[in-house]
Image (cartoon, rainbow, N blue to C red; front, side, top):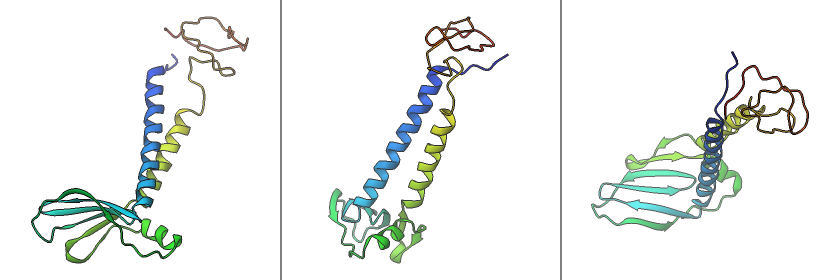
Length: 160
């Protein structure tokens, strides 16, 4: 018996891939923008900066809660190559218990995963569609596509 795939499941998979790719694009643009400006959260115990292509988490110097704000990144302009190197650094501890987590490697990894999934899930037409013109054959029990005339092998009729 042939395995049939639900069309809604394929649509959900495609939406997941496109949403993942959009997230990766936003993360890449945001991290590149963070070389010039730094969104920051100043909490009572922690400060979190989206700066230099990554996330900088450090202890607050004073227990004053200032909330979210936009700060100047103050990163010297050393050229594109230096910025790309910073973006692909591994997470590292910095002075005074601060932790810097760059977003280059996760962004590239997630992009590759979502591109592979999109390719894997859409490399052939679903079993309920004509392989030539991709006409929806749900409910069809004939052996010829009614749209283009291509012979279609349906092992089991697909209910609509």
